[in-house]
Length: 213
Ligand SMILES: Nc1nc2c(ncn2[C@@H]2O[C@H](COP(=O)(O)OP(=O)(O)OP(=O)(O)O)[C@@H](O)[C@H]2O)c(=O)[nH]1
Ligand SMILES: [Mg+2]
Image (cartoon, rainbow, N blue to C red; front, side, top):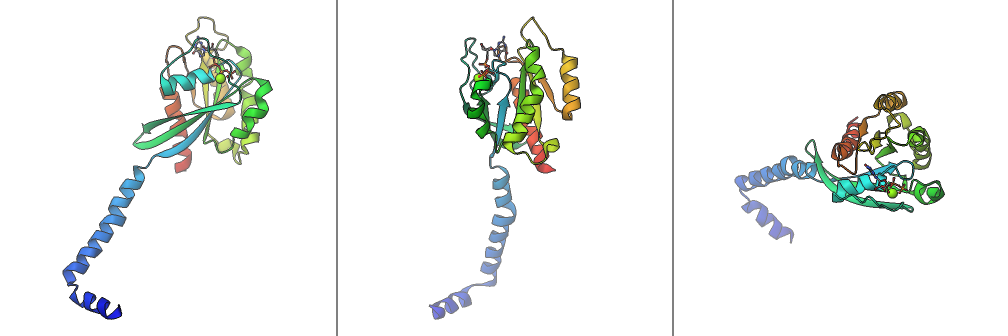
């Protein structure tokens, strides 16, 4: 074997060795980084908020573009995936929709761990759901075991803006977001498909920004 290898090496011309060297550089320094950057990133985002604020409706609007005006309360958790491109990055967004009703607390909290972003949701026609945002944030930080809560990306959604009756003003909601950590705030309607895409895209941007830091 050694003799055959010696013969083979003797027969290799300089040009062939140079060719191999260039092929190696092309493969590892140029092609590999390009294919790696095109690889899709899996991000887990979680929707939290009181029962009935429209978390499942937002997820279904975003992933399936459908709205059900007689949606049932969620029991435990459900998730759906959607692929998207944000600022040139390919991302698979794994959206975890949780049950907001208190009686399902023990079924939803085990799924908080590993979330990259948390979407705290309330309904603009329900002031109590807005007042509860702080409790949802605390519950998430505790059960997800977030090490640096001040750096964690939260996005706040005020849903059901299509409704005529409003009990939370935009100023009130924005003030809470600024005070609580300068969180991005979006007013959405799962029913009329308003601001749903931009809200989820912002969640991705927030995660990518933290990742870059
Ligand atoms: N008008 C209006 N109704 C909405 C909107 N989003 C959801 N709803 C309705 O509000 C009700 C509750 O919506 P869900 O999406 O089930 O609420 P949820 O937050 O998932 O509730 P839980 O699963 O119990 O935590 C349903 O009857 C929906 O049709 C919206 O943007 N506008
Ligand atoms: Mg639900």
